[in-house]
Amino acid sequence: MMTEEFRGLADFEVVYIAEAHPKDGWAFQGNIEVDTHRSLEERQAAAGRMVELEPQLCEVLVDQLDDRASRHYAAFPERLYIVQDGVVLYQGGRGPFGYKLEEVDDFLRKYERQ
Image 1 (tube, rainbow, N blue to C red):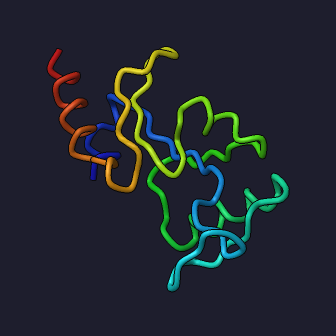
Image 2: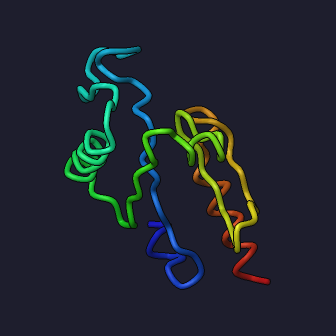
């Protein structure tokens, strides 16, 4: 697992942002039912539910209700980044189709060899 393999090189974090497929919005059958977040507490609860269903091997942060992190990093619906000292070194494509863990793995392997 990448989080284990690169533990000494990188800190991994998940930022939970606005729900991409809320049940009261653009939902699809078989998805976990999450309403559009109307408060920070609802967003925190949804992030907690995600962790219960799929435990994370890293810290989980929750974006503010004004979606400032999501807007700053163009993260909706999902995106991978490598940031060092506030500078973006890698920006993955927009998920789900541009979400390529192998690119992050390759980047970290090259960075590790430097």
